Image (cartoon, rainbow, N blue to C red; front, side):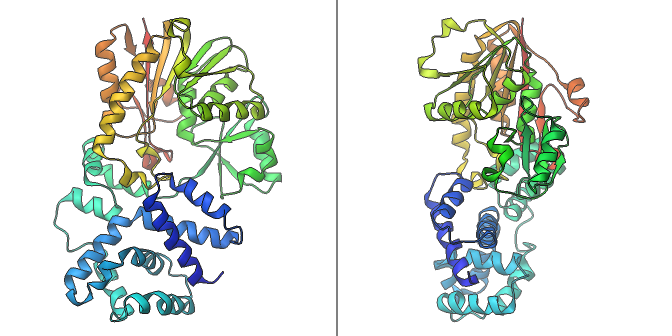
Length: 441
């Protein structure tokens, strides 16, 4: 497909993403399903350009606003800035485009919408001021604009990470790797790696997870025979570490209080060798149905799903050797995969999740047996969803104590500061995660 038509597809997706609340990856997948005429190269161009626009939106819009302020006669740019954004990404970040392609884009879009503005002069100004030399010296604002994040997010991470904040922001704008978790009920990691290689899929050993592989290139997972036969699941390496920290053993009773579609539940069931019982609880019946279908593919037989609204708490009181609360959260630790979270997550939403997390943690804590373990995890890097929740819980539940994980994490090469496990994309190459382990006395 010619470059002009592809830009039109990008524009359509930009507008759709602004209207939709769905994750960007699902939106793109649905868009492509209804446009099967797009080849793999075309899909890659559309997706990467769209993600570039979403990831750098504040940066691009700030440059545009400054350009308009410096060139009052060119205020027409501001009226159609949505159409400008893809062009900015294409010209600024895809220099490999041929001069003919640039000419076509210019003819169709630039000359139509900005006939009085010389494109070369505009691009030269953008390049000259892309360092944001016109901004004030406030570091929070500078980083927020440069990497396109809300100021309050930047401020919170600066309080946590100090000089590392810029590295974190830059890493959150990178594409996340394709992480796989081997199903040890069916194969070893080495056996899966060899089979994938026979399918033309090259992988490397994960950095930390003993059951993890990283694909060197993206591939169509649904067409893999190894996937169809349940040899692996797609799961971020940080997510894999949650189950490894929970450390369920064969014969135990394990309760997953927020199972969702069951990625961590499946992992724990496999670690248990199908021996024992794992109760997977969730509010969403559809997601539990998805988990049930995944158990069939994985050959997992010890998971029992339970809709939370039907729970009779008395049946579970003090029964769990391990209780996992993988709490609903803002998901800011997954911004690499879902860049729209940059703009959809608000401080009021963080407060909403924090209150909900406290309730969910207290509800599930009653299921932990004396001597049992309670694991709390989020894919967030915001203190109000993590440390603050744990501190409030412990203040109201003196029968629980924190179990530091320094020694255990050191065995896989992760340095832990304090009582909690914190995973960051720029440090560990994983999604952002927070994990706390507690024991009931």
